[in-house]
Length: 354
Ligand code: KG4
Ligand code: ZN
Picture 1 (cartoon, rainbow, N blue to C red):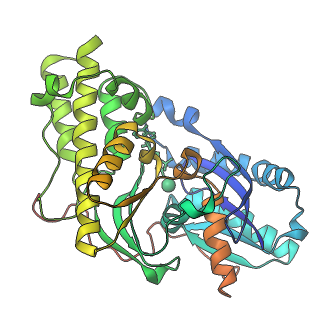
Picture 2: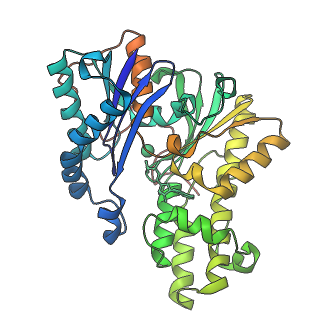
């Protein structure tokens, strides 16, 4: 089975052709980062307009790199939720038009399910298939828009359960906001990661509180740490040189500690031996290193997809869609965008005691 996946939920226009076995035949990602950079974050209307310009060339490129025509496809998958309504609409309309014109089945995919299954993608340079996890696994999904821990018992919506999520900012959003405060540009994760590598977290620890929320809960809260950095900068000005590296190291260390401790705790509570990382923040070197060490100490197997599978891409959507198609599922041409995930939420935004 060869499935085209289209992703336009946020600030990447992406398309890919993937088999139901997870082999990536092509994967084209066109980022809008430069368009949004002057604003320090994604502007929804700018995103939707740029998707409209880019979606047809990106889909053409994905088909041509895979060496398949629309007529050769077994189906078309598209991110239908969650995301920016106007941005999602562009991908949906493109997918529907192509599905109708080529007479192919259409399936909508929940973007979060795509991220959670991205570990199964096989790219040319990726590890061999035996290094893919079996079900069940506990997954930490940390990106610019979402941060949550899931128990994944299978690929369908009903087999995925949220164990805890952030009550306020996503982890990537915290990186982006702190980078903006420090004058480091957008997106902030990669630059904070780079500066933190040569910083001493202990030297800036008084500026950055721990982000543990309540110890026994599996929920996160990152808005407090962002406010602490803002207060520090308001009082002392933007740090420079080594002090900037130290602050980045302290901030990243606090965020990573919370992500690692709660993920490992979730695996223990669920009695699951496999841990999977997903989302753009999974590129963070501090997170990868500390998660690897923590999993090793507790005898957990850790699976970290290659970077291209962690950040937003069309391949994860094509793969999740291929599994839906293989299970005989279809969506009608009136499929509408939804801003929220279809996965049941256990964490209320803004809710509960910290
Ligand atoms: O998954 P993704 O590409 O898009 C969303 O669905 O949000 O994630 C992008 C997020 C941004 O917030 C970015 O700052 C963060 O991932 N990010 C990182 C790193 N690389 C990207 N955060 C921390 N360390 C990194 N190395
Ligand atoms: Zn994403």
